[in-house]
Image (cartoon, rainbow, N blue to C red; front, side):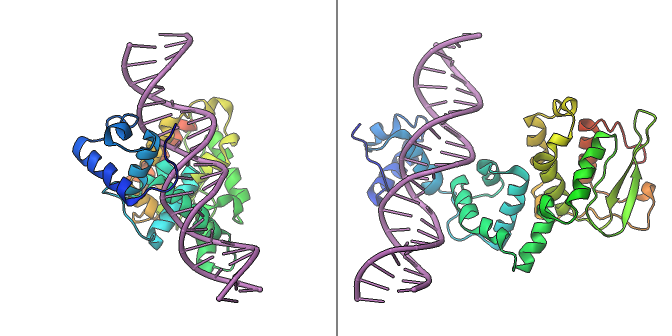
Length: 262
DNA sequence: AAAGACTTCAACCGCTCTAGG
DNA sequence: GCCTAGAGCGGTTGAAGTCTT
C-alpha cells in the first residue's frame, strides 16, 4: 500500500544503514516505518542482508571460492544458505547467482580439461565408475563399506558384522579427503539414498546430515589429507579423524556394527 | 551507430518454518 | 493442538549493462 519497489537509492541505503547502526534490527516489519522508509520490512531485511551488511565481501569470486561452491553444491544441493554459511562474507543470493551464471556453465563445458577432472571427482553419477559407485552404496546396506571408484590399487577392508556374513568392502588407496568428502557425501545423499532400505532411511534424519556437513571446512577444500598406505595391511592403515568420523557414521547408519581392526 | 540478443544480479514472490500466545 | 506473525529460504523476474550482428 503505497510502498516503493524496485532498486534501492543511495539515500534509502543511507537511511537504512544509519537506522540499523543506531537501533539495530529487532523487528523488520516495524523498521521501515520507524526509519521513515517507504519499503516493506522484508525488502529492508533483504537489502541489509544481501548488500549493506558490513561483513559482506564484494567483488568477484576467487577460483578457490568457486571450487568450494561446486563441491558444496554437490554435497548440499540447492541449499544456498547452507553453502553461504561456509563462505564467509558471501550471501546465499550471490552464490545462487554465481552458480546459475558461471559455475553451472563451467561444469557443462566438455573442452575444459580441468573442469572435467574436477567433475569426475564430484559428480559420480556421470563418471565412468558410476556403476561401481552405485553398487557400493548397496554394499553399505549389506553390512559392508566400499569407497570404490578409483581405478588405482584398491585395498580391502573386511567389515565385521553382527551376523555371520562377513562382507568385504574396499577403500581406494589414493583418495584425498576432498574426494572422499565431495564424492561420497554427495552420492550418499543425492544419488543413492533410494538404495538404502526403508528401515535404514528412517534412521537418517536432517540432524545427521547437518552434523555430517558441518565437518571441518578444510576437508571440503581438500586441505586435509587422508591417504592410505598401499603397503600396509589393515592394522597399519593410516587415517585421520575425519575418515574415522565417516566410518563411524556408516557404522551407525548402515548397521556396520563396528570396525574392530580400526 | 543502431538494434536486437544475451548476460548479470539485485530485488521480489511465495512458500515453509518456528516461536509465542 | 491450533492460529498467527515474523523470519528465512529457494525460485523467478526484470532492469541495466554488455556483446554481437
